[in-house]
Image (cartoon, rainbow, N blue to C red; front, side, top):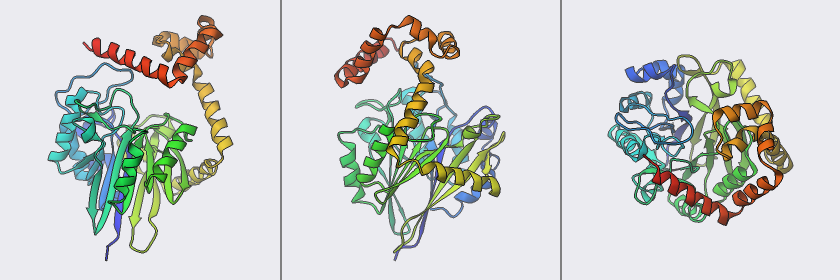
Length: 383
């Protein structure tokens, strides 16, 4: 007879200017405060390690911020009780393949299991099984492709291969009692799934996942019960620093799964909040309000018309940012374009030019050509 198993799942984890001192001193109590009580008694404690652990790694050339931390930072996770860290995210390769290898080595030396990265793509795709109280708990982790992905010969993160991985998930599900998928993707600061993200996550459930939790969005999203499984479209940050006046950044959900024989899996949501010093469990009254809003927003998820309309509105708001990025303009142009509500792009690019760009991005064959050209250019000009 199996004993109950408790799995605690955190969201994104990363040091910041306000918390780095505690990482350096290994002060897990200051960082996690009363959240440590959520980890105590759990058989599996996991989260997404959103930075490489390296003492020598050199930052790669990429767009977006570079995140990194010293190898000794692993101590705070070890002391807090983490025994699984997902490495499939958009920052794990910020210090190159050497940074990925250093991270994997550091976790392994500290008896923390890893999933979602490897010394090559084949290794990165290997799932993890945690055996707890007679249960076989399966864990897989995927990241969307940026500057982070493993290749046949280079260390990096795992990505979701739409041709092979759904079959791999189905096959792996036969080996385990409960399957958790960490999916690092979607759009930042958006609480609903895009139509494509929803389609992917539903397919992950159809392929055998019991729980899919999307990380990376830096905000609490919504929940969908689908085909005997559960999808969380945005778990929010767990430990990623405090931003004054930015409630969505400062809030997150810790997930607690309880597996009991002859009973359906039980999923609990525990709201947490960032402070200038670390994180804490959200006060009871505020937590109740946060969960009420979470479940109310989640009522819209099964409405296909709502999902489409909400996504279109969000994308229209992002137009002044994304279009200059596409055309490679600098920050000054982007800032001015946002103030003018995309006015500069409209001046520079005619409708016909936009049709050309649209066709290149929309057509899979054209996208593949562009991707190959850009990747060759990046590789040629690495140094």
